[in-house]
Image 1 (cartoon, rainbow, N blue to C red):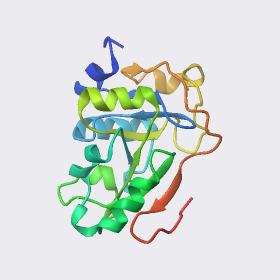
Image 2 (cartoon, helix red, strand yellow):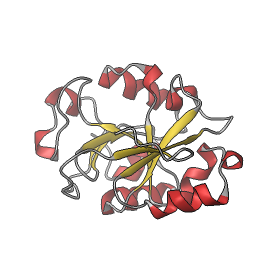
Image 3 (tube, rainbow, N blue to C red):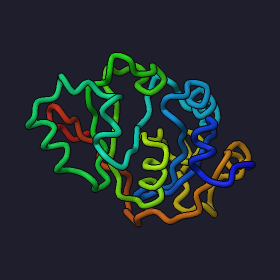
Image 4 (cartoon, one colour):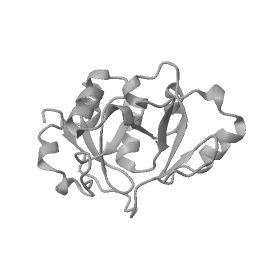
Length: 182
């Protein structure tokens, strides 16, 4: 790891591990296709599954979603669920990178108040891709000390913070229908 801070690693296309609400996540710049490909390969994750965007504010998410398909009431309902460990599935922007949405015409997004993630997103003025810090099918790490050494050797930066202590992964809600998926 040759970067002195998470924003530098992020902006250079690096892969970063960081604490979220319940587990450690691993992510990258959602606007860097090469970083997205590297992330999926490292996780051994099926690209058709899509990824989550984690942001410090709704405004950071707007370039990635199709706001025209959301009514003011839907947006109000979305905002009322944040920040609280709730991931919401929304219509994706027409210009969204296919690796972000996978086989779906939607994108999963979340606004967090985890201070390390908020600081990173504010420093780079955009969301970070978020997926659990584990190889697909294995348990995710809950601390930076328990990150899989196989992952650590492929990371460019590890944020050595703490999760918010939630005891389960984020709830996933369809922002249009209100249906709860998880």
